Amino acid sequence: MNLRLYLKEFERKFDMEKAVCNHGFFMMAPNVWDPKSKSLTRPLTLSNSSSVSVTISHPRTLSFLVIQVHGINNVSRVDEELILQQVGRMLRISAEDDRDVTEFQQLHEDAKKYGFGRIFRSPFLFEDMVKSILLSNMTWERTLGMASSLCLLQSKLADGTVSSQTNKKRKRVVKARKETSGNSPSAKEIASLDKDLINEHCKLGYRAKWIVKLAKMVESGKLNLEEMERRDMKAEEVSEKLNKLKGFGPFSTATVLMCIGYYHLVPSDTETLRLFREVHVNVECSKETLETAAQSFYDRFSPFQSLAYWFDLIQNYETKLGKLSELSQLDYKSVSGCSHMKQLKAD
Image (tube, rainbow, N blue to C red; front, side, top):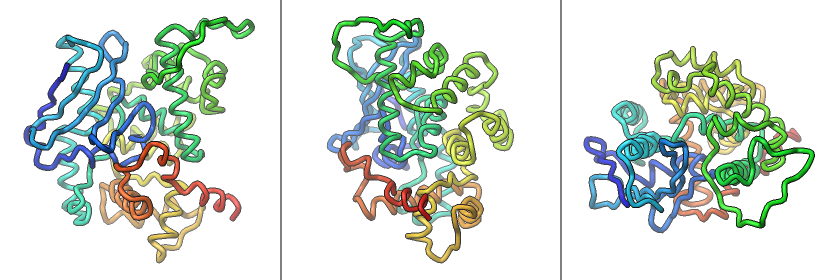
């Protein structure tokens, strides 16, 4: 069956392709972008915590997004609303997001010409946080692999092939099954596991411990993601909370803040240093001074520094590789300066 998400006053500025293909998250499982149909397919979460696969598209003649729900003939009103909320969050379809796009494009003429301003994100903040951890201190190709492994693990959790009760000393004998990718694991699912089981399936290394601890804090209520999402707290308060969590250094914190809608911090990493060496050659910076230099360079776009940075980074990628929206999934691993990362470590 199909659902509709009406764009209403956002229709004039909304471009499905540009709203999706502007950040590495869209390349990470369980997201699947189809360059030919310009549609996004992935699982979303229902009210009973199960997942359903949907395909999101925006035919140019229509004033609404078409959300094709696979495998279900009837969706309850509660689940319909939940699906629409998740799609709206991913594509930033809200009055607040539209205002941010307008204000940023008033400061950045090139971004306005290109139609850039919506940074793609996940259906839920927890998934954004997990993916931010996967991005830190890791090659892009390996990050893509870890995200895929987590979704495979989630499918095994959903069908009972793997459970938190799995005996570590005595391996279970299970029938051969075709592995299918699932959803990104929820905080509840991750909190029920231990780091060793996760690493057995996903090879996350020390990140597994961080992700399990994050999930348990969310599930226990010690970390209220809904409060952070509603912006009940100031950006500085959110940063303070994140900085107390293992796995959330300056880069991860800036990325999560950007996902929430706070754009004042530049998420600086080796790709940032590569960008400055290749594009902003007049700016002097090193690994030690990068964070300060990048922040200072983009301060003229305050409070949208990270949007201005991502605009430059996407332009840099597309100059080399062509439109990201037209790449095949096999080419995703090429979208980073992994070889440059090795050089930086040697410098």
